[in-house]
Amino acid sequence: IYAEYWEAVVSTQSTGQRAEIQRIQDMQKEEKQRMLDEEKELYNEYEKTALLQAQKAILMEREKNRKAAELEKSIAEENMRLATEQRLNQTRLNKEVYTNPPTDDYFAQFNTCTR
Picture 1 (cartoon, one colour):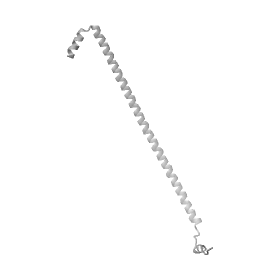
Picture 2 (cartoon, one colour; picture 1 turned 45 degrees about the horizontal axis):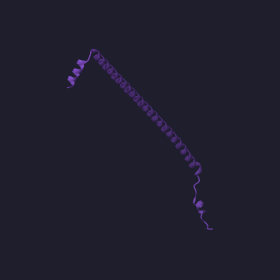
Picture 3 (cartoon, helix red, strand yellow; picture 1 turned 120 degrees about the vertical axis):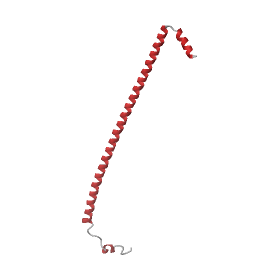
Picture 4 (tube, one colour; picture 1 turned 90 degrees about the vertical axis):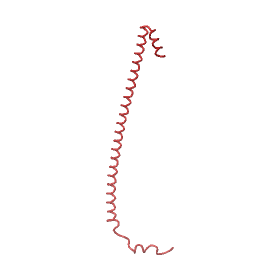
């Protein structure tokens, strides 16, 4: 039914009308192609932005890891310094301060009387 209708419509149109229809169809094709090109350009821009963000995230992660390693190294160095300092202080205490251990006479003087 539709083919017969279309043939009837085409056969009754003049060449001017056909040219007008062809011009409108060409305009529609151009518009559709322009829309497809814009969509493709938008997609490419989105992909480029996503790639840049991914690269930026990788760089930020590397910087974070570098700072964490640097902090860990400085903490380890500080711990080594404190351990050395504490060991030297303990050695000094053992040699200079704790040289005279208390004897039984020292403890015997306490708790000898009541009030």
